[in-house]
Amino acid sequence: MNALTTRRAALKLGLASAAGIAAPALLHAQVAAPAPTVMQPQLVRLTTPLPASEIHVFPDAFRLFWSLPDGQAWVYAIRVGREGLYESGEYHVGAKKEWPSWTPTPGMIKREPEKYKKYADGGMPGGPGNPLGARALYLFTPERGDTFLRIHGTNDPATIGRAVSNGCAGLINDQIITLYDQVPLNARVVLHPKQLV
Image 1 (cartoon, rainbow, N blue to C red):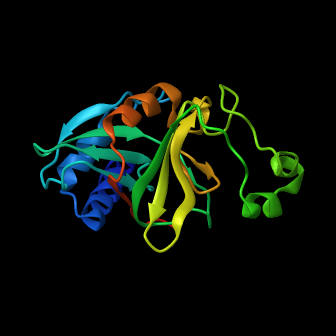
Image 2 (spheres, rainbow, N blue to C red; image 1 turned 90 degrees about the horizontal axis):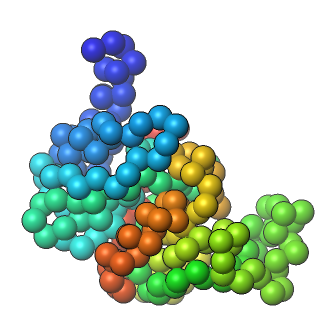
């Protein structure tokens, strides 16, 4: 094991411990990501099971876990919110939409008016060019209702494994379609805090 491999293993071990997941489960989920292609969803056995039927996002590992009742989980490669826009916390799936329409948030328009202002009034209809992709899970809290955070699709695989979004977690379109079919309304979603600075 070289120094880089040892460092990566230690990093993954720390992420797993911070998330309350036994290290072998997260390490196992990390092993098969071939470099320039996007990892296919993997079914892994968790050493310390998560509660069933929950989404857990680990932003430093760029992985989303969908937990199953038998101590297993489906693991998906994702992209996450860029610095200052990722919002950890507990949510639930308050809405699900196929080929959703999209309107930028006021914060997005304020940060990048040249990019988003043209969509402020009418938004963009759903379709292959839409930033939310093929499917979207809308994250809600009891206090705020719709948080404007989403778990959604993208047709840009090059963004997977990067912190590039306006706060949402993204999967490639064919994988969000699979996840969308697995996750029911009101499912609990945990966006774990970033551990790395």
